[in-house]
Length: 342
Image (cartoon, rainbow, N blue to C red; front, side, top):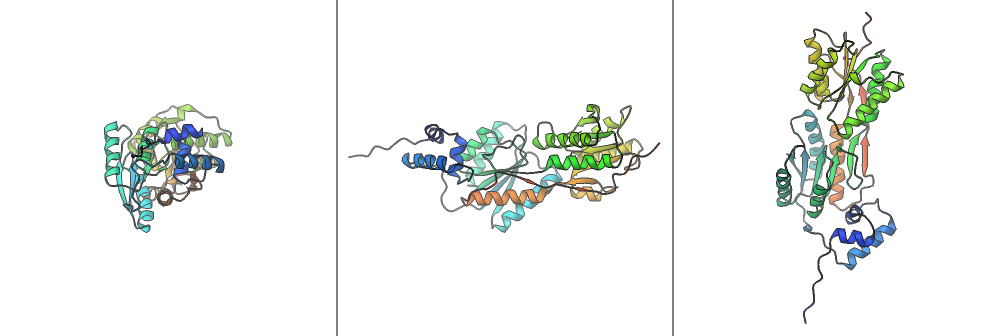
């Protein structure tokens, strides 16, 4: 007699039968704690009944490799993240593979990265400034590769642990610092449109103005993309206004340093003629002339926390907090001062 082999069941089928979402089934499989006991029991019973086995299930021996994926690698910001991830991964006796998938990447390049992840049997992936769309998440699930996102691009998905910073609070504090010095016209150089951190910093800037009783003026907001060149262009635009700002808050240190150059091009001085404030506290902020007042974003710590979270997931441990935000703080240096009285 021959035993008839049951057809393989999918996560989607389990989810449909249990009356829950696919991400909920995924959370149960990953041992996550953010699932009610009753739902967990129902899903686990169905998994047992159907003899579910993950596609691409790994052997018990792990590779000791963690993938760290950026959209771009040409930034000191990325170096700080790498430093933190490397420290935590090395402590665990593992290694890091760093790569980049650009925002405009074709499906082919993403597919190639996934093939590489599969070929080297990576234990997990840390993705930076991404929204981890459903198709990529599904592919990582198929490969049994847990993921953590640093600085998510869109609204954080609670199905994937995310590590960020208190962008809104940091921006409020930065703006209030400038208004407390007496500035009433505060320009803002915004970050990449659509990114979660960009929106939070812009909202924090607006809230800081509101707290000081200053009306928001859209003419004082210029879009940038976090790099030096966009800060320079934005600074030139703001300084060409008929009534230019007396202070500029840039949503990244690199853009703030670009504003420095725009100020120099106009034969003006920081902070005597215009105050400039950044966000990140990269090493360059301390070396600038004058040293840059900025919001310290704990980038290396964000990398460490992300790596440690992922390593716990690799070991099958539950992640208690799917969304973590590390505190920012204002670092006051010599680039901000009271506005000059004419």
